[in-house]
Length: 485
Image (cartoon, rainbow, N blue to C red; front, side):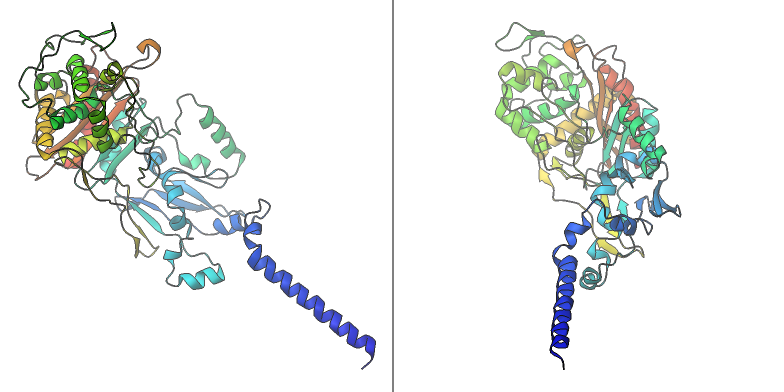
């Protein structure tokens, strides 16, 4: 064989080896860099080449997929989009995913390796299986009752099952239709701009992402701290509380909206929401025990997920005695999400035990086989069982003869606490109306539901009474549905 032919063969062999080595480098070493390159549309095309899995409420899908016939073939659709938007979030070809669409994206998009019976083979072939489904804990009737109850007013509702932590309703108003954001057209961009600039902030999930001063609804926590610490031993004994009450170390005098709060017992003060009594109780308990009780209920917890993140509710542990007095009546720096206040009511209803709230019952394959179970977590004791018993008694009195009578349900025991939270510079803003509650049907062995309602644009003619007038009927509607009343 001629010498030049042998050289050519060697050279061609070297070129082939270099090509194979480069192909291996591209496929193995640099594959992630190419996958993540914005110019690479193959991942997006593959993602939308098949229908997305569904989110189920009450066993029925509230999401779907439509074949557009375009390169990004399947586009997300929503049934009753504004009703379920605070739960589903959106899945957009342009703007990504939020809420359950985000946290459960692996299952819904079909990329979760647990969806495949042979996950190792799937990793090797890099194939995408059919999207799975996410089964939520929501009660569709309770969700509808909460949404209709707000009736276009700004606010939020959260309802949980005390014995399990299952989230039964999660509503935020005003809301929006996630379907408007699903595609990649000019209409999608226009909807995004419109929603983003809307002063009413319809895309804000007020139930879990907005914190409010809880006002007198926080007095449930203050009462729990006072009873646990032994500051109050008898619900009907005078509390030695002046009216007005001078905040410690200041000349500021705290007053009440109504009369009869001087030296009122804890029972009377709770029923008629006496600010002076609870401000003094908070100071008597002390900042350490007040902060510890708030923390036990879930305040200052930055790790809460349901499975998407919940904004932390806050109780400031670095306050002086005057600030502590205001914090103890749900003002100053104290802030809470509606979900947090539903957790407070649930802990009272469940004998002082608090179950972490969760929204996903299970995830399943397209055929129905379970992929993963619920997000239920262990309960923790946040107060003495005897304290919870007495708080249930106090909350029942509020509904039977106090400021929360509009939440009463025939054939059930209902406990509640109204609240009006001042806010704005010089408290000039329209007060927020709160109502936190729990309910147990006469033929049930335990409370079935705990609810928190906040209405942002409530009228407040007389302090805490507005919580009973604006928010309590909404809570009542939700509780009636859950109890089957």
